[in-house]
Length: 330
Ligand SMILES: [Zn+2]
Image 1 (cartoon, helix red, strand yellow):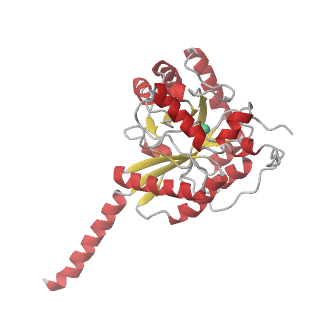
Image 2: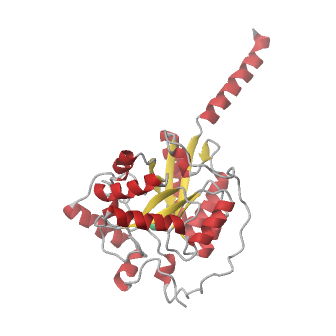
Image 3: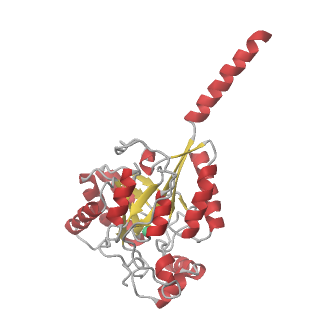
């Protein structure tokens, strides 16, 4: 009947809206390498609170940043340094496959003390460590005692993180998209679009970025215009089939720009150490489509290609023997 059609239409529309809401694709964004760069860290903390932050345990501002993020109701994970295959300066207490289970456990327990309120962990670098099943068993054995989840940053195709995590019942998820392998606002915007497309296709996506000025600018512009069918979530919301760690406060927007922290480290002039301030990539990283195990000449070519293409990384590796994230001395 004609007069019933409008109500049918309304019911139809309501059902469609309910369906759309129920099928909203979930996007988790994790920002690594927190605890060294106060300015960019604070800019990230001014972004929506579903953005998860990953703090390096031996960083100078790690505890301070964790406390502030926790007060916002933001999810915090430990960004655990793990040994890469490529030879490069390492963070203090970098986990290696050669370490005993006791040593790995001691370093992880110490990191948990250094990064308060953390409920999960992901790997900083780690192509050698995460491709070692015995090494990752040691990590997961320790994490299972603390009810932590693990986000595999996937810095190598044959990562064993998920295999080891399943043996120990540790909830595990993996990174899908890197946002800033190339540090440019335009590139990060393209990667954010890829993450949205990935989430729409697969129901969810996990993107990892770093506190680079170009990444911060891209997120500041992109997030207010996030498509309506995309829901920004903390990374633990994507632990399918596992219990999500408790959040003390509900997630909320945090539009205020925080003031700079009082104990900022002295600013090193850019012309003196530009590479120490702006380089934060987690070693060379595979593209999101690259899942094959690289070995021999293929692996070497991949390393050389990454170095060759990364204009920022190249001078650092050639000219500096200092750790990427060493504390700046005045
Ligand atoms: Zn990192």
